[in-house]
Image (cartoon, rainbow, N blue to C red):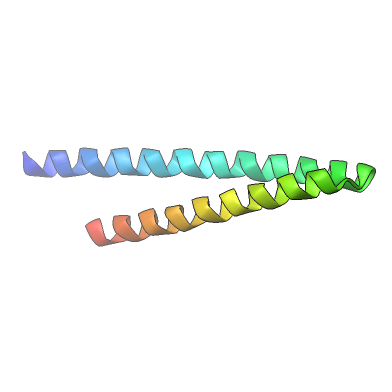
Length: 75
């Protein structure tokens, strides 16, 4: 019985991680789009936005690494 609960927990955890990875991919896509726009427009405002997005992305990556580490410890 306990085992099933453990498996369910792990599955939820994995789903959470997949969701995060999906989000990250979307963010990267957005970033590429922004970089392209930046080349075309050379705007400082966009640079600022991009920096903020990179910050967010780094934060997400950090969290993801933390989660993956936790998962390995669970196994």
